[in-house]
Image (cartoon, rainbow, N blue to C red; front, side, top):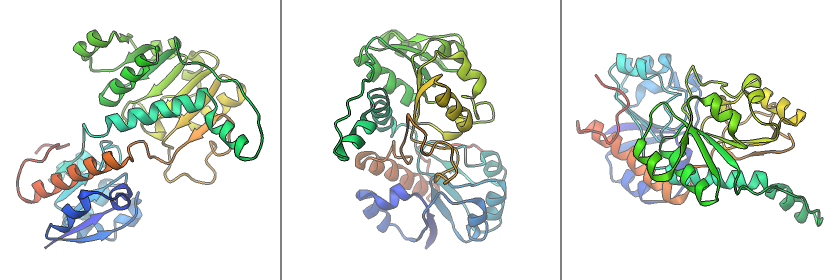
Length: 320
């Protein structure tokens, strides 16, 4: 019997056929509520044959400890691999799988929800009405506004298509160009991310987090943007320097910030975004719909099963 650690709270909390599929396996499953820090994983990781993880801190020390024990497989529930030391996993010959191609619709819908909530002041107005107040604020239309998309992968493309339906002008940057998509949807791809920053009324982030993109949106790059810009982040919290964002909102340079992610999750009481006017925050739920959790959980589980059965997983992040 394989011993499995399951830390993804979306997998655990959301009903669906993934639970029945897990029960059919010859697994002994321990459930912990992630994201777990490295200090929490180090004492226990070696006793598991596999882990279905969320955004747990699987750094070099954790992976080495797991490899010296029983750990044979890491299955990421989700697509972001920035919390997993892929180089260390490759060195110790532990395959890492992930789930691309399942959550792009769900995250794109949440992105547009945050965008409209921000520019039309929907949460603020909702709060007034629930307090019995009839305070009517003026928001903005998105029609004919320029939206900048940094990262034109699966999610960025779905956001672009939806923005076009609202009559927005789409400017984008990505290191990899899908010319067929650009030609079909008439997307303006600019020569650099900075060129996008200078043109957009609304910016939405869909880039991966790495050493080059950490705190990419900071004071200097915010200054390149139009005064009154709105910024949406459904990618990774650490793409944004949160202190610089708060300062830019207080100065009026940024009109509003909406994010499904923060740099340190779960959010800490001292996070500068808490209580900041014109900031909308959701607790990393952009991909948490009944439909998508089931898709993603089934893929993560199938990846793990395939690894144990020496079959090709659906998506492998490292090669040996």
